[in-house]
Image (cartoon, rainbow, N blue to C red; front, side, top):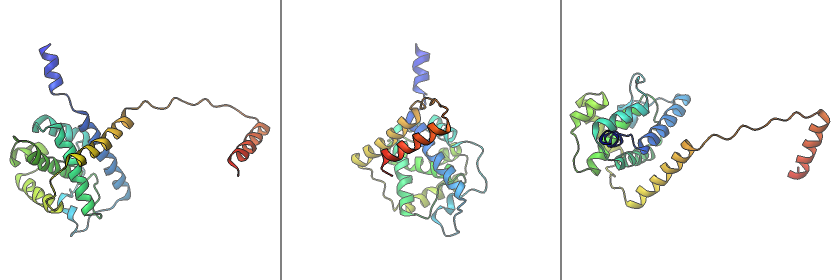
Length: 201
């Protein structure tokens, strides 16, 4: 029984899976557009030279396992990322910067939300970057957000609703396969004529 309780305590919260899924899709979509930040772009500090080997999901799960952040921090980190990109529309989160954005937004959220948290040196180790880079990214992120750190209960709940809808989409069972029917040419033309009549075309 104690083993089950211990395993449940270390279970990955759904919010981590949902946020990682959303960020992975955003990064893949922006990778496809192949936009790269300009030197003066606010995201240039977050831009890596190569795509990290670790997936977005594994990276967020690693942060959860080692940083001991409350689940609410991941919602707030997502809100901060949204605020950052809204203030800088030219910034696109892609596979070269998503990991740095994640570790920085979680670090910022945990400092604002939780009473007890690890220091920047520890977060840098968890995130696989140097302490100097972690410090620089944190400052750049804060200025990029305009230090807009407060999250009202209404905003928090509205983002939770968005993430919950995303969870339902991820967990909903796939649609059952449709049966295919073979029509003769005559039946096919009659069926298309009927559909045109029904649609009023």
